[in-house]
Length: 471
Image 1 (spheres, rainbow, N blue to C red):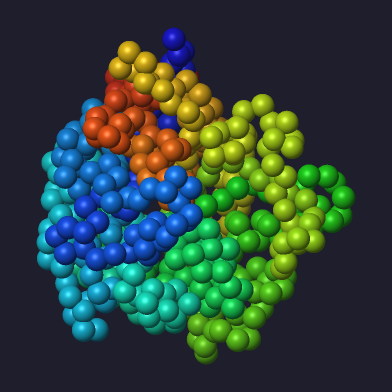
Image 2 (tube, helix red, strand yellow):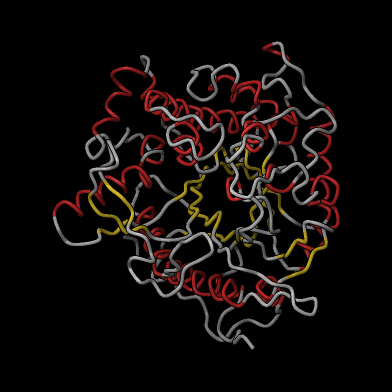
């Protein structure tokens, strides 16, 4: 049995936010129903070889039809907040709204209205992510994120959503992991839309950073009292050796993975000292006034952290001149199904790293979790490795909070096993097991651990003691 003593929700304080995180494309299904048009992921997943398992998210978790019972289960597990995204192509099938000649899908808006109302009725606080990688295919046909018009397209989408739901929803996240959909989608081609070209990279980065700030401004304008943030995938970066080449490689990877989108938002510009190719943005891509438009005063920053990265100098990766040293090569004792190192100390380090920025007021862990091989035995899923992952990473979050770093919440990735992008359905991150043949839900041991953590009325023996220390 797991020892719960000295560690429960009371230890983190009364205002700490506990939630799970999801994404529309990964759980909703119903991709061709009620007026929804294809997104880039619908197109990408139908191309041979793009998804490792050859699967699509056409059905996914059937959350579109099962959201009421799923949210009841979410409530039963004790979580206060539910993070979900809005499908752009479900709301605007043409990608643009009426002001640009497109259609507004009232049926799509009505679905999210019902979803929000059900959250509120259950006492669950909705946290909306405005963009979680599912660009309408209609806009990709017009050039996608390399087309500067995407800033206006996205702005209209944000305007419509905030006017529709802003009277009910206070917590808004502008972008989910901009590095992932920009670099993996338009440079390496590993994610949708699967384009591979360095020519795309600088425009995509710049237009994404502009949209990030512009989206924040629109939310603040339309939603009085809005709590506005954006999220970044992030990892502490360690050099493989202490050699000058490996140390320099680690600095370049850190600039790409951890600094590329936060620093423009803070008014610091792009990290082109470490990554000289980024200077091409100001020289060739940006228009007058753009650099000032990149900045926005976010109320919070979401960190999405899973593992640290260890890198070495490499001549085989142009512009970055670095390569990751695999956990297997480093003889790491615990590796997830995704091939990621389990290294709890990295959670503290990444909170500390972002906490150093003067403009970062508050930090939420908006994703953290692990995929392991789950099996159902006698109707139960005893996922002790995942349980220990969350327990150990949360210990690091707690230490960061005790040390005065501004961490204010934890959203587990993820609520339900789902469609894990290019990996298909095989990797399971959920606290709830989903049998994708029958759609049966089984709460895993990790989910029950959270339930005990969050619903135990007795305070833990150890009280939270802030030192108010900032790094």
